[in-house]
Length: 547
Image 1 (spheres, one colour):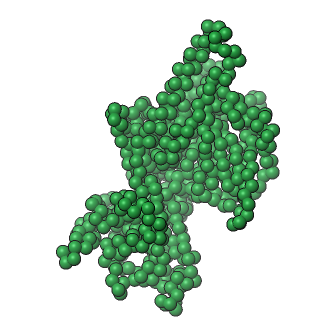
Image 2: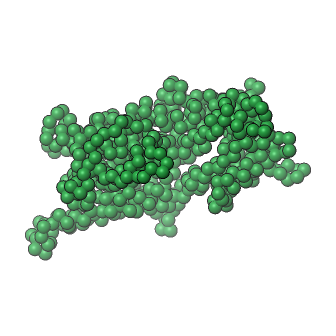
Image 3: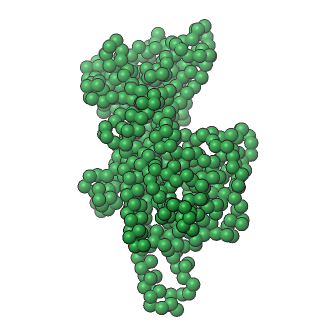
């Protein structure tokens, strides 16, 4: 809740607008942006029922805020859905969910998966496998077989130098199919972005409130999602045991954490404070470390109405106890922050290119092995994926791209090529157009399609993912150990794929803790969500026993 003074200075906007889909912004270019502040003083029916004892809700509801709407955030949302006495809000800074599970279209007919090119399942009984199975049953995800002339042309291979001119090309003899590796690939249809949207809407059953109404009148057991929302100014409001500090602009609150959210929506910039009992950082390691480093702890001495020198022995003893608790909070936050800060991530330039004719390669997808002498780690024929369609079925957009080449629709292909971490780091300062030209030349040289009579690109763009290749946390100079040290006491022996400090109810999850795959990130978030729910259940049982 906010203080009365702050609420008076920032009146709430009480006029609801129609529900919007995630990423839908109804403002035209050139229109001014209005800044509006929304008070959190508007209490939901759930909060009122918990306070006055009306209804059958029982104990006070807990609130969890998930920062990040990638696969890890969606996994955590899945684990916390329908939890008794737990409300969940997911905040995503971009317009769409999924993180690096992202799709791109161009010219009305061309399509690529610019981030994760496919999904694989490692644990058949895990949360990601269940979500993927539901998507397959609904037709949102389909197997990507990549068969050509009865032979599966998708797998891994090495490179070799051609003796005639020393050019680095694919070593066909080293090819091993994904089928032989017992790996089955799935893709979203009509694009990869369809899967995270399906998880949020169908698997989780989340609601998508307006920015001005997020956190208000939330239906019990139904998570809510808000895209285009940024989180900053995280402040400690209480210690989780009843003690609270008056921290502007929230005022005195029974919740543990509070922060300001800002969202650009409908021509307005909305600012609204939110309060919660737990925070889940489902972001990359860099963003998690930055947010943890800016947390402002409450000053419990503000609650004292008289100096400690004039207070009695009991007051001084309570003050010492609070000092100890405050020091423990700082240590917990520092452990989380340092673990995230020690984790490194390498960038990746991703090329999306379309050709005026098929390349006629032997492979529809090829994952190259180290060393990456050709500067490429992965290539994929996007036109071979289910329901993507070849360029032969393209509409006017593809014909327009081929002006001067053919009077009819072309029969080309769309390809994705991902650069190696070394090449991406060396060319990190290039503009997207310059990176696209260099990476396209490297791709064509690798597949031996750079001759005068070979197909030419009619569309060529590049996207830079800043943290595409996460690396495990490094050991500090004193040998503090890995990211799990001192954070997951119950799961330390099993290498739990998340970080969690129960004393402050803040955790972190993502591919930088679990693995580089989309399924790894999803299962990481689901594991952390289960840990948070377990902790809340223990607190509620303890409260019932004490009552």
